Length: 132
Image 1 (cartoon, rainbow, N blue to C red):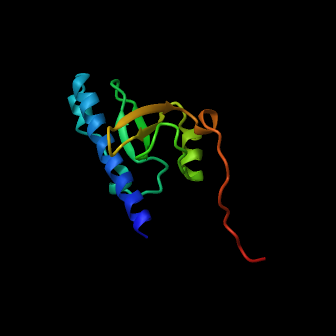
Image 2 (tube, helix red, strand yellow):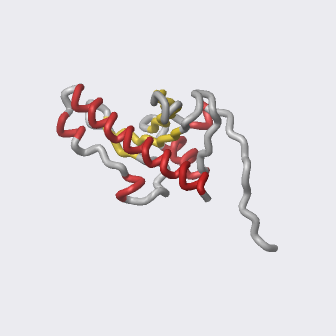
Image 3 (cartoon, rainbow, N blue to C red):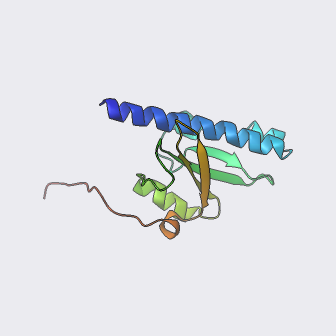
């Protein structure tokens, strides 16, 4: 229970970090109006959309960002839902996975753009079981 709460807290902190980063990125690029429209959709619309943050490219095109945060190193595996994977495929030209790592000590980040299936090796680790 404590571990789950810590993971949830770390994930929420990472999402807030990215909201602030995106607002700064757009504002610094001269897109102040767009920076004000960055939205933490995981909080405002729920966690089932397939992404966490709605942001924008400098030209106004929507950027869908899924945030994965770890206190550990860059190569640490992460969990991703089927919905997030499918969303990344459907919106591959607008989807960004922001990987935050070493978040508690010295936060760093990299961006994977596009279809997660093309960028990562996915391994099934759980199934839903229904009675027959």
